[in-house]
Every structure is written in C-alpha cells, then in structure tokens.
Image 1 (spheres, rainbow over the protein chains, first blue to last red):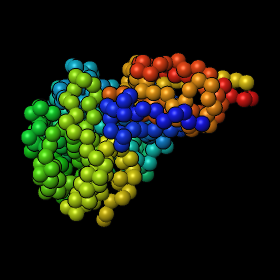
Image 2: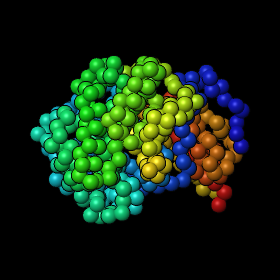
Image 3: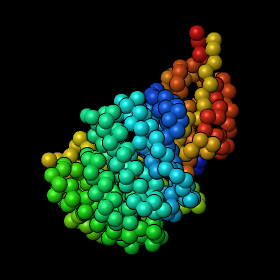
Image 4: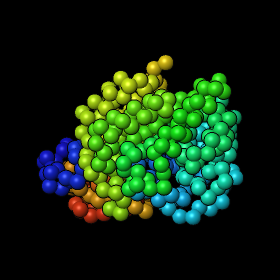
Length: 300
Length: 82
C-alpha cells in the first residue's frame, strides 16, 4: 500500500525525474560485493560512485579497476582518488580472472586508473589480465577501457597483442572543455589512440571493435558534440556510448545541464546514421553500462 | 511474527559514504507488498527508490527525512507474518 503522493518537487528537486534509479529488491549484489572484497579487487563502479552499481551488481556484473585504485591524473569529473599510486599487484590479473569465472561473466570489462608513473603506462599489466581471463574463460568477450598511455604506440601494441575483443578509450568530452574537464589529457591524442588501435588491429588481421564514450551536460554545444561524433567515426571508432555527466561531489565540476531522454534518443539516431556499429545513449549510460547488450546490438 | 531489517545498500558511493532520505513512501504502521517502494534516497549522483524485500508492516523508521544514512545503516524494520 502506498502512502499519500509525496511532495517530490519540494523534497527531491535536485534531480529531474528521469535521473531516478530503482534498486532491485532481489539479486546478487551482496554476493558480488563479498567476492570483490574477498579477492581484494576494485571496481570502477564503486570508485567512480556509479549510480548503476546496484543494478549491475544485482545482475552479477561489475567492471574491474586494475593498476591500483589511485590515479596519477586529476580529471575534474572523476571520483577516483588522486594520489601517488602504489606498486602493481602481481596477482591482480589472476584475481580478475578468478572473479570473472566465479561470476560466470560472458562479457568481461577491465578498466584502470591512469598510471603515468609507469614506463609502459600499465599496458603489460593490462595484457596479463586479458590473458589470465582468456585462459579461464576462453569463450568470454573481453573489453578493455584503457587510459591514453600518453599516446605510446608500443603500449597500445602490447594491449592489442593480448587480443581483447573490444578496445575502448573514452574521449569523455569535446575538445574545448578538455582544459577544465581533463586538463592532463589531449583530445587529439585520445582520437589518435583509437585510430591507431583500429589501424593496428586491422593490419594484424585481428577483429577488434573500438569504442569510445562521451559525457554530456558539461556545457558542450550540439555542434561540438556533432563534430566529436564525426571525429570518432573518422578515427574508425565502431561503438559509441553517451551519458549524462553527474558530479560525484560538490568539489567536482558542476552539472551545467540535465539532458532530456528525448535528446539522447536523437543523438543515438544521429550517431547510428553516422555509421557507428552500435550506440548506447541515455541519462544513465556509462562506458561499460550493459556492455554485453550494447555489443550484441552491433551491426556487421 | 518476525522482523526484517532493511538496510541501505551500496548506491554507487563507496562504503562509509552516505545517502540522504528524501522522503518515505510508507508510513509507520502501513502494510507493504514485496517490491513496494519504501523510501527515496538521494546521493550526489541520483535519486534512488529502495523497495521492500518482503511483504509485511513497517514498524519503525530509523531515519527521518533529510537525514543521512551510511551504507549498511538501518533504514526501517518490516514485521512479517510467519
């Protein structure tokens, strides 16, 4: 039985109505949390304060965060701790493989903090993790969401040599906003990472889908988004995700605008028309949100 | 009769973080079905509806509207007929 209709506008007006999530009343969330704690694994779901966490954990999925849980960059949209990172955990690749196997994942997403302090940016550790998961789950689709490795082609080569099925690197925002949103990154360099990965995989006879993501609501204009989508296609990017930027705290960049679901639907149609093989756009879409479903919708 | 404790699940914020009670859908003494929304919570990123894990009667609310609750903290209790 429901009580009287609450005065939503007065009490919960911080978010528009479409930014409401329902927590599943049943599911595997507690088991996922226990497993991650047991194997001492971090997830970007938790470290980035992702609002999809209850839904994804309840479905028995999570996106692994490797290379430690503190980042050498200070992007102003991201909740992950900015601090001098510690040494790499040698057993982390095996732990990710173990968790993936115990969760029975068919689509494993592995991401990381940025490790500008490491000579290879952590590429070898990415490769070891891909291989460890592949050894345990030969049938699983493996998606990596990598940092830009400062554009180092050798690092991208090392990751690709481990044969991920998807190579994801997010441009995150339009070039004009890089200085405020991700000051230590470079838009052209990120596009270059995607273009190089695609070119290299194709030349090597590998089927690797490239993927990238864009946050909206940071003050970008429609024309800037349009140019960014065209830039991604020109870089050979196959799969696009677009979601609402949400500020992790009052210390992070504020949301400039809440983008309505209909506008996301229009972007999705426009992106498909540009030739992306798969597109996910919506308020709660994140880079790895429903990655398995998004990948399954791809056009040949 | 037995009592089921409803605790705040992880909402994306890290353990130790808090969410704020926006409002209660269900008042003390009201009956709920499994899956009915009990309370609406706010984090920095979104609004969340917390459903009842069981059918029963809400006996006590442990957090008033606009109060913060830590992940794992007690939200309310539901009395269940055995």
